[in-house]
Image 1 (cartoon, helix red, strand yellow):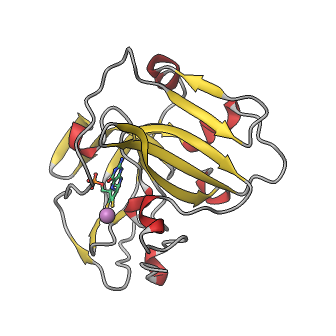
Image 2: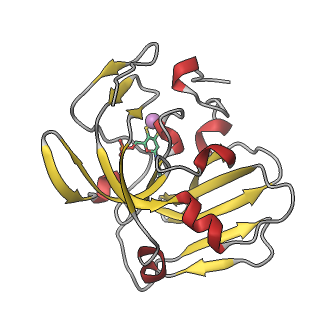
Length: 196
Ligand SMILES: Nc1nc2c(c(=O)[nH]1)N[C@H]1C(S)=C(S)[C@@H](COP(=O)(O)O)O[C@H]1N2
Ligand SMILES: [Mo]
């Protein structure tokens, strides 16, 4: 895959760790994932339900708004589109929010995204990764174990919610955790959309 460094970014080969709050401790007995908002019927998945969905492996570049970019990382995970297949969306859904754990609140973190660009192999709920310096391995708790979202490379990495707990389907765009604090709604690194 060709490397294209977005403006204002530098390349790193390490995978830095960035988040607010404490690190979620996985407990399969209490873990669940909700599909809610503008859907005909809300759905709640167990960890087993989620992990039984078809998975893919793909290489996705990471661009963090703090200016590091990491190229050539491979991820294994469940494509966003597999979750769409489970939910019947109401007419007019254009955006989604992916929720995740933050300081004891399962829905304390969120990031908004448009629905349309998330249908490919580069929008994954990830549980394994590898790169040139690391063989295939489980995602560590710090990177979002048991499941974290990795967005397409046309979005900064704060759109990649760790410790995911649900997707809300929306008829309007709505700010998430960082967007409320002044970060970009659209967050395209190639257009250097950092703030709003
Ligand atoms: N639940 C949760 N997910 C989160 C965050 C967070 O604070 N809480 N931080 C985001 C930000 S700002 C970034 S840059 C990426 C960093 O992912 P990494 O630590 O795996 O590199 O996670 C994103 N996902
Ligand atoms: Mo970030």
